[in-house]
Image 1 (cartoon, helix red, strand yellow):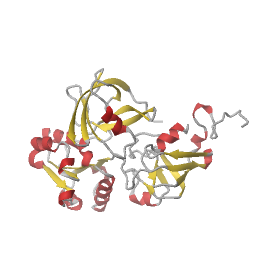
Image 2 (cartoon, rainbow, N blue to C red; image 1 turned 90 degrees about the horizontal axis):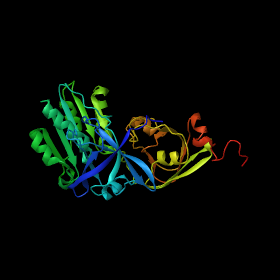
Image 3 (cartoon, rainbow, N blue to C red; image 1 turned 60 degrees about the horizontal axis):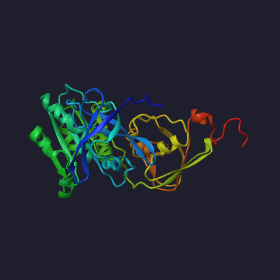
Image 4 (tube, helix red, strand yellow; image 1 turned 120 degrees about the horizontal axis):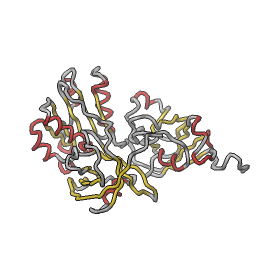
Length: 340
């Protein structure tokens, strides 16, 4: 189990539209929490499908005024988080965590290349502001489907000027990642957040350029190559067969079934929730950034927090620790002394 989250109550303040489907939320915690560092996020407890679930959102500024600001994109494929956030009205109560950072910005490097795709600009935005303040040598490449999809681009242009370069796919513009990596100083660092395909491309080209692994930093938000659809998971060791709805993750339904799962980031980054795949009757959509492309191609393991099946079913295994389920019940859902 992950380290317990320290929760506090908060109030939703003002909201405003950044684009037609991205909304900025100002959140005021009831008690003073730590100031956020660039790349930080907060967790929010959201009522989804009748139960409280955790959703994570990057902070778009250092919260020096005591407010946490997040930008939430309303997704058609949402598992309830973005839809739930968009339903909130100013003044409503929230339960949030203190800021956490798994996408830390290092200072004092020779050069920085920041790359963002779509809503992936949210953790990159405060990095750009911090590097500008530190008078660092950096550039920000920001790609979006259309100009109406650009989030905080005007603010970035005012703050960092010519360090910002925009790429609009509808206008035939693409980031030449290989060329950009080749221009980066040998000791420079690359920070990227964006869609799954962008992350995979950057990771592959970085590796092919023989760049130091530690100089590439990235964050993901668990999007995949196929649309979310319901499927089944079977765990022979536990005698379980479970339906996974289109709007729930495998990790969530396994937790609901009482399987004692280990997890951390819930974004496909840490690998704590990985389970072995015994059999797959349909395509597996690996949405993590924990495994390499070679490891994903073997279809031997998956991150249950983000990865899915196109349809059909997956047969998974669990470690021996999962033989004993929560509440002292065995894999069939009956107590150890129950003869049924």
